[in-house]
Image 1 (cartoon, one colour):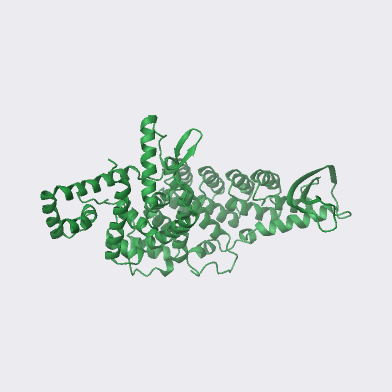
Image 2 (image 1 turned 90 degrees about the vertical axis):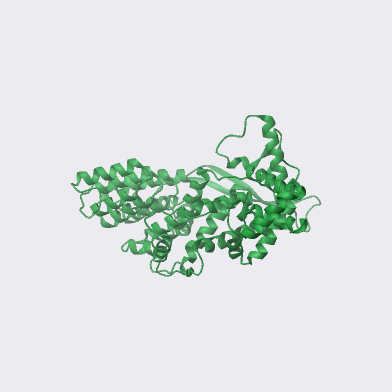
Length: 205
Length: 317
């Protein structure tokens, strides 16, 4: 029953260079190495931003800002932790800022009312067109609304921990390391997040 | 293990975050307690519902993000003023670009601001009475474009109900002259940097490229072929540089374009321009392009053919 997402997050490095050599090459100013490093992680970074922020525009901004910060500060990376942890510290900090700003200015719902009926803006992320079956489409929209409501009830930190554990498949120990907190605090955060969501979505089967 | 403690452990159990012995004890409890088993089932149902809401970014979005990122970095590199310390990283990454192009001149300077200044200066000269110089300045029907800057009640002493509206007016004038006229050329050079209008940039580069023997025009072409965000403008600029493919400075820029431009069409044009001039030093470079070029088979094939035409091997050993 235990759920994990093997390989959900992680480097897709070509066998040509191991990660440490790649990072050292970037630190020496090798642009190709930088591109390779970006490509090893960028898909999971974008997925995190998309799922967390539920906005294509914000996800793009986070992507750009995160990797520009990596680009500008890679010289300060001293191999004290894994590159993945270092990168995710940057990404999660940026995402948390976005979430906190949204809390202040009230978050935009992913499902919006239009003259043609409710529209799920998250469908923008789908490769395929929205489902042709209107009934199923409506059910999905309702589910989307309820889940958005449940996720919207979490604090930015709870949402981040939940996102990293549920969707990104990271271990709580690693999540604590990324967020600069203990594994125990991450556990408590995950517990609170699931409790809140079960309270909202518990009867949804 | 009682029901209260199980309640706290169910999410951790579900996510595989319990130590094995605790997991065993919890499973034993779930086997015997229907209420806690329902909680575990509820946790599973929640997870299924959330999984349905998970989104994968589209390949197009990922490609756009990658493109935007590399373009930003690429532009930052390309705009390093000579000798300037671009970033806290000193001589490393951004400076690789500068090191790679040791002999390039002012074309790498950021030209946006200076272009605006030049445009203002030249336009002022053109429109000042007596400052028109050698070319014909014709004013057609004054074509005035207005936009409202502010609206407010009129100042003291005016009639009640009077308002004051401030308009910004842009007056359109037509200027004509010979391309070899230095003032016209300066205006065209400024227009070729008009970041809001790719059509004007394209037309300016297209007209100026026939004067690429002029040093400022050559510098413009070298700048546009690297920096212009519009593929059509970059192609036009590259076209204007074709007559100078023997020039080492031009070759370095074209090599950079071949390595870095995101448009296969521009890269192909760069291969063609570079290989139009026989140069044995190109062999190693083309071999490395063949190794790297996995995005567009046609570009790769062009490079392979160029190597074959030079009787060089395709791979490195």
